[in-house]
Image (cartoon, chains in turn blue, yellow):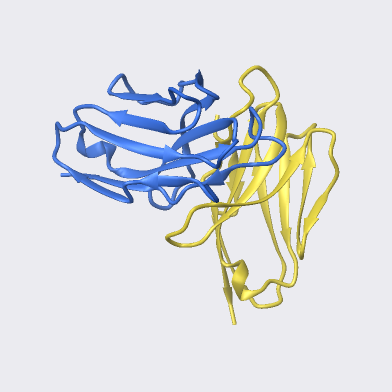
Length: 116
Length: 112
């Protein structure tokens, strides 16, 4: 597609439920990144993929968070047994090569997750 | 480790200049700059690569001092459209490279 597409735009879930957030990167982009952004803060790294391989998951807060990109295109970030502290904007970004440089990221519009 | 940006916020009158600084404690491969307007996604402005030069984008330019692991973003003759939050993102110069670690942001407000 023309840009990075994320769905849903908004998600309200009850504490303890599982949620799946979807990211569809720009067609042909090799790398895909997941970030979490609190209001007024910079994006916080979660994990990233080159093609279907998860290269770095050091930013995932705990084992309730997982991500996959099985065919090297669309990615899903799953949060199990959600807690109120998981409430945030979750952003996906993609990049043309297998790293951020030299073309930078294109960010999606994000999914606003609210856990009640 | 997260890079440190300064100042945290700045208010300008239209036509004034501003400098935003980004400092890291790690050896860097590159520094990226993004601007985010309220309610929108961050948008890529420019990248400074290790060994690279000062770069420009309209009246916005940036420099990268590899030895000091610092970058500065220069906004000249600011326009109302420059308002937003500016983030630097750093890419480490080792095996941890590939992803960006973002600073906490600098909120820029340009007033008429």
